[in-house]
Image (tube, rainbow, N blue to C red; front, side, top):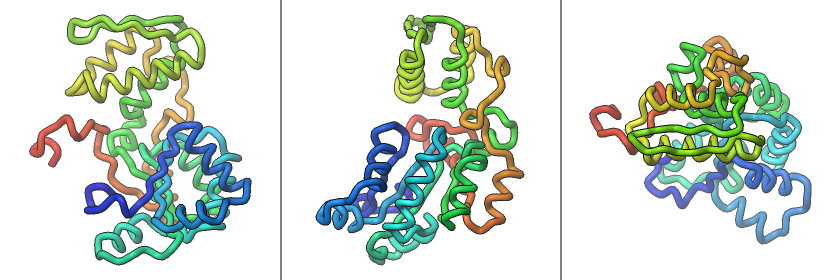
Length: 251
């Protein structure tokens, strides 16, 4: 959307990547919304961005709220209106899912069908073709399944210590590693993943992939697209960090 839209201030984007944003939308769906706040929310188009899906009941509440309060349209429709300089209808929204995870098919798709809610799923073609998750989800999987209480990494001559004793520590370590890969360890290469696999003693093939680690297959994506309700869109081949590469490589 950002690449196509000159003025992002015209669109309100809610990324459902953490408990705070999901809880906010849940609260809107379960409590009366004060008039002024509701008017402010409905004034700009809303784009809701999901990734993995752990809570079907929470997603069902959120989709039920969206279709009851908003006119949910396909993202291409919303982008087309913005590109053409038209003002989207009052209370317009779009639903999207990043990374093309299998949980979009197993968890979200039945709910979207129940509410006839259109959505767009952004797919990494390497993951859909190989069944191997893109690198952020590989890191999540390795940290979650490591038997160790701490890990040590040596990257570019520097040593990093991370705690992995509790689920909370693993979640924090996962976030820190992904942030390091995006910001400090560029350009990202398979070497970093290999370092993490050795340090965690948890290579990718050691434990079965959950639906929130595994990518959707082409068959599953095709089934959703054939329904006319869910559209597949481009999320790059391998989830490279685009600001870290030059224009030629980007093309």
